[in-house]
Image (cartoon, rainbow over all chains, first blue to last red; front, side):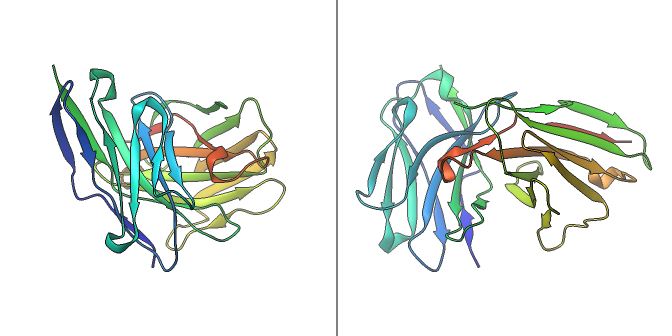
Length: 114
Length: 117
C-alpha cells in the first residue's frame, strides 16, 4: 500500500540557517511527489512537485526538493530560512490512476528562532 | 492561485445534532472535490471523493451514512456530519480540482474546525 512517512514531528531552526525536511514514501512505481505548506487560516499551498525528469525540482518561496529513488526519499530543502517560513509542511504521493487522490504524510512543524 | 472557500471556519455543536460544511470553488468549476479529515499531529486522511452530479466515493472505513456528501453544482460540495458525537470533533478540509489541469490544480480550502460537545 502507498504510504508517506515524515519522521520529524517538529524541527526548529534559526532564521537564516538552512533547512531540510525529510520525506520517505512507499509506492509500487515511480510516484508523483508533492510538498505542501499549511499556514494557520489558509489552505494547503503547493510548494513543488515531481513527476519525472530532473530529480532536483525547484519550487516557490526558495524551496527545492530532491527525488532519490534508491532511498525512496523526497526531502525538502531551503538554504536560508525566513521567519515567515514557520508553518506545517506536508509531503504527499499522488496516485497514478485517474482519481487524482493524494496520500499525505503526518506533517512536520517548522519553528523558526529569531 | 485559485481560491477555495469553506464555511463555516469553525463550529461548535451539541452531540446528536447534524452539521453542514460547505466547500466552494470561487473561480473555476470543479467536477471533483475531495474531503479530508485532519487529526492533531496526524496527516490529512482522505474521507471521500465528491463528483458533481453523482454519488461520492468513500474511502475504506468512512461511514457514508454519517458523513453525507453532496456535490450538486460545479462550484459547491457539502459535507454533513449527521448525529455528531464528540469523536467526530476534528479539522475538516476540502479541496477542489480544476479539470483543466492535473494534480497541481488541486486547491485546498482553509478548513473547518468542528467541536462536538
